Image (cartoon, rainbow, N blue to C red):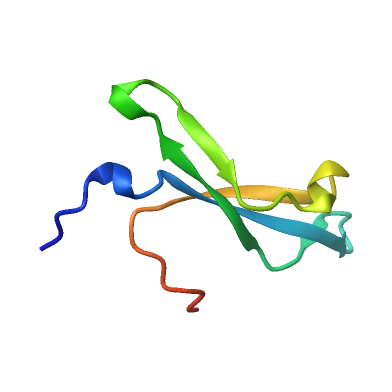
Length: 81
């Protein structure tokens, strides 16, 4: 049994996928997502959350990618598929 506090784990994992092209319908084709950070709950029951990025992809500043927020409900499997 774990003694971990629910605040020991982020609310969301933040991933980024760059746009690698367009398909025949003009929709963006995305590359493989890479985890770039996490969203953490605020302390003392305050509303909202804190976004913490480990890296900021250059494609993000050029609007050439997509950010995904994935609920962090289970421990990471270390890139397992």
